[in-house]
Length: 195
Length: 195
Image: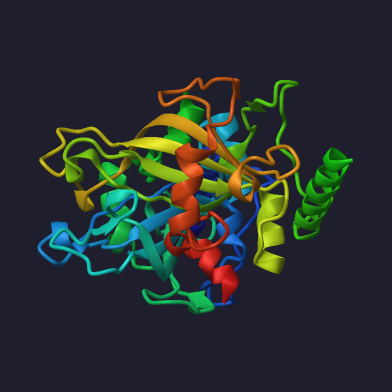
């Protein structure tokens, strides 16, 4: 009987949590293996681009946490939901493809001199990551956000990926990202939707 | 009679040039005013992102030719044509939206220290440009590419724009861009289609 009551309380909590989820049947869902590994997204380069942060190794003592350009994309149906509501729906997918800084006799800043000036251009692709908000599938992840990497190297990327442990990514995103684990402060495309 | 012969030669040359054009009825065309000014593209942020060159003022004696992040997008039907053929079809539209470097007590490199490291993030939008390949409409432009600016400032942008004179942009693109006036060397998304 005691177990039943506890189960009822837990179920009640879960229902309560679910009630606060932003749900939409129209959100394109990521695909997963039976082991809950995410499958590599298809056509993510046709998703909605939102920004490209750049923290070169040369500006970070040779060891930047994220040395490449990050091309960040939101899956279109999740983007439309965010545009309408300002919230990330359950099922939201955000892809991040890494592009090395263009290599052409890079200088002490890791930059090159091109016809357009001294600075940074995108070279070769070097990795693919995916962020999925899915509280039902990943109840242990803060905010329901699960982070995946399909390889930190040139394509082809891995076909599946297990989620990073919650403490690898979520804590920093929770503490520093402005809008539900997403760094909207660095994504003018998203900020323009919030105005 | 002499005039007629010259006209015939010119017409013949034009027909010859037309024969080499890459045409496709399926390419989404830009809109123009009766005065041949381009109208501001709609939904260009949903086009296919191809790259984001960055040449900060701080790295260019305070006066970069292009000091902002350039978010460059190809209109989807033109992108599909390029993916299939490796060529830019007549009617191809490429948009370039400028985003100021994120302002947060920027240092001598114009960069900031954020939780992800020392570098560059996208701040506020600061301009919109459009590149259209249309030999029929702009026969005087090398490669048929016409360049437009809808303002070098924060949105809202201008609703129409006259083309820049041919010598403002085309010469540099003709001399330095790898693929028919487009800098594919800096756009890994496009290079991946050429492999």
